[in-house]
Image 1 (tube, protein in one colour):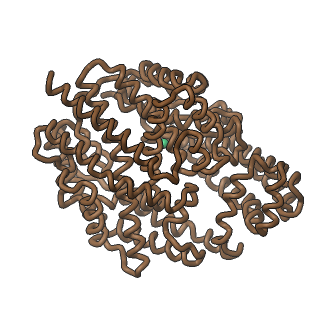
Image 2 (cartoon, protein in one colour):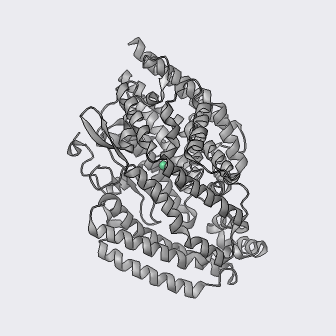
Image 3 (cartoon, helix red, strand yellow):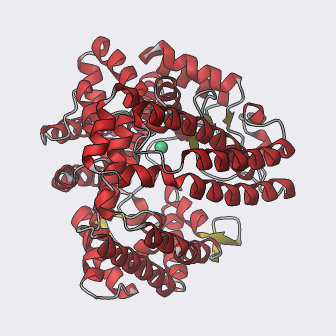
Length: 598
Ligand SMILES: [Zn+2]
């Protein structure tokens, strides 16, 4: 399909709320640097000694400064993501990266001085009401205290950062530049890894299987390098953990998410106990596709049929879904669209994928996606607006420093909003075949998030355990453990091809943020629980949910979710989520039954 025929043509960002032009942005970076130096000169050494009122003023001033940094920085990022070929854009992006890191170093003293205070000094300051808007973030920051090294050592560790990110870059570059010849039906052409992977959604089974086989052969060329990158990074993280006295390799991620290790472990166990739910669908899907058993290449094969959905209809659906839940959310959605804060047109020079970025208390969030007129794009639009309404409402009520939650909780509103929109699409769909597609897709997205991501976190636990015992993470060892974890999940329901032993080698999360993946399982399960709570009592739920959004990161996930009827300490929470999942499987089964009957 030619890009120009897509319905979101012309839906592009207006960056005027950020900066008028690149020249102004460049001079603003200089001004920000001047402000930060002045701030540091006046405030350095005063964090613990000047009393609660002065500390409040310091934090307010820092909050303002960081919002201006965020605005100017995002202007550069937004241009880089939408016009990668522009020379002015690239210069600005380079300047932004350098300046942002200078600014970070200049402002770091606030956090370090705060952490250096004794518990008694910190408690005395926190007991004063003045610090209330910052209190929770300040408490959380102090949890790092036992693991922070003296300033000189921290600086030495920081100085190693480029060497560490070189491994990450190498891993990414090996994948990004790997292309192989493949015939996707229009003659042999060079294919990237991402393009080969996209065939898993193709209706032609032979093509799906051939694409994966080609992928695995291609990965053979880079597997040893990818393993060496992973081995180096895991080894490095473990040795820094030892220096800092961090006992468990999952702890830093759990602290970032503000989740207890016990809660995460209980969730992962519940996920593993429910692996059979996913297999039930795989077995049913095999019947639908007329197979004895699914091959891995059939996991995301289309069931039923997709249909075109134009941008305007998608906007209407998401608006209806948000407004139906709470009119305030629909208002934010429409205002973002009216102000040009949504970039939906796919085009050359624009990044793939989708994200939402919240800028500051005075600027509405920006959303980027690539709208290709498919039903799945409506889900993406809803997902990103789940983030946007969270950001907008949290920034209305909270300080900038207190609005942004850890990753696990951050994905809860986006997933919840996505589930509401999917429900809306399913209810409105009259074609049984498209309905079956939507129902199947809901299960398969949920399985990918809940089951596969937990399986990956278990694989990482194995990797850190091995490396911790002094065993190198070679390609063969990684392959063995990867197949073992996958077999625990898929069991007899899906045939795993031999080449899949290299399936670990292209997962970027392993390389960038350890144990990142369980956040997706967590968010999807909590979102399922919220859907169940909403259905029980919509009148009571909606205002509590708006309050949850506006609370941002001013409390712990446990305290934020409790008023919504989600108790993270109680294993029953996960049982409610899986009951909801079970309901969705049953609906998907009924959806394909209706196709058989027709
Ligand atoms: Zn998201």
